[in-house]
Length: 128
Image (cartoon, rainbow, N blue to C red; front, side, top):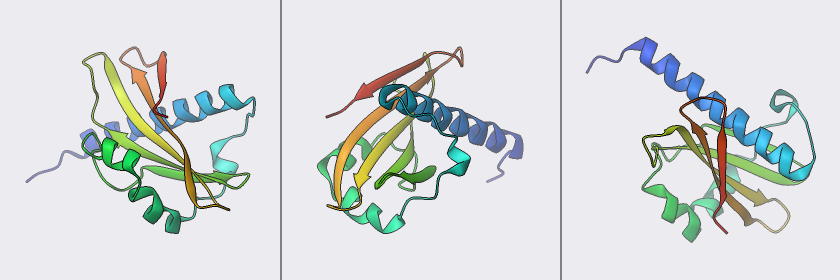
């Protein structure tokens, strides 16, 4: 199978756009504004309890890959973003965002962020 490298770059760019949109939405909801580049990576050990959650298995069918496209941590919260298959024709990119609390090792938030085809508008849905 031949993989078109240009298509792969476009896919990565869309992933970054969706993650950026996710961060923008998180900043808007929490009132915190911090560049993603300055945040440390999330602890990947927390993926195990995350993947055992019913919310993860609910979203797993829509995930393109079981590996997160991005992860970071802030204030004891670990964020994991997974690339989703678009639910509608209008969607350009969809990302599932899981937030795990480090101290109690529990899932505290599950959201879907949809970057629409215009590349500017974002839809945000909380699954809890």
